[in-house]
Image (tube, rainbow, N blue to C red):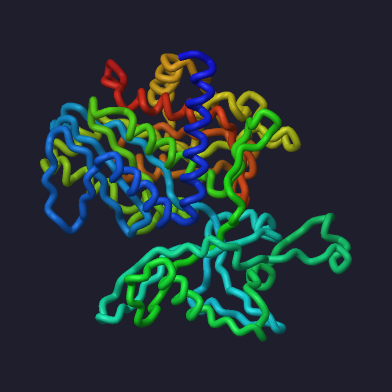
Length: 440
Ligand SMILES: [Zn+2]
């Protein structure tokens, strides 16, 4: 491929990534985005409560809680002889979630009570144009309980900073109290504004055939309406909300869609990683095991299939930030736009081992991409992800990998515009990989 055509395909890959990010403000919407792309590509949707008829040469997906998804291809059905090539990522990102009794009236203003979901960089949520999206569960006119997704899209809320004149010491250290100081303002109390009524109107607007009787409950969160963008003199960077970890969901999905069906492949994207993954649809729950057991119902075959399998867990890594270089181990400080990062931790905060890392290095070499390595400074605590959790749940050899980013858990994160397509190509190659380690 010439340089020019490479750049063009890179650009269209990134443009589609920006669309995916924009259309996925919550885990429900991210799952919905992946679901539509899978349906468009001819994948068949399975329901967990139904009987499954899996055929050779099939392509399927299944969702749980509408916020986690597993997609897989079955070129053959002898999984215990072939093993799976699996890619994992997570659909959730740190954010502010509305409390059940969300409406708050203070000093003449309509506000929303919020809970902090995950490790939010709180101050980044100030002075942003915020919208609201998520799932609402209602009783319809027929008396049935039904759910739907909503997305206000317009900026309907804001959390303004306090002026520096009223907080003179703010630049000496700044704390945001989540109970008192993170409440978004929706408007003035005198203009009215019953939040449940507003919600009802939004449902009617988006789902005209959805005859809402009563709103019973909701899971809604705030998000920044600023669209994802390419930034930098040469557009070196991608700036967006939720790069952690929709960037990996997107790359994983594209790899699965484009890998063909040479061998059994699977993509799992789960909710609740940011709060530890322990839930019915999280990586620390039985979703993956349930699906794999249905595909290999014979207990011995199930164990055999996992022994021949490998999972690449993709979640962003910390790139070396030029303003804060000393927080990195100098030997393991990944650069933006220099390739994906293998994440290693002696204490199994990452599940990488020498064999899974070697396999990735080999595939990247074949594809002509650099690989970087991250190890946290020995005097700092290490983060974690779904890699070790999934490895512990189903006993699969796992690699933790990620694209280098800045500002992880900010309302607007930054990644490199060359890195995503590189990871996509290596993952595509991984999904076709015949043998793992020869002497096991
Ligand atoms: Zn993450």
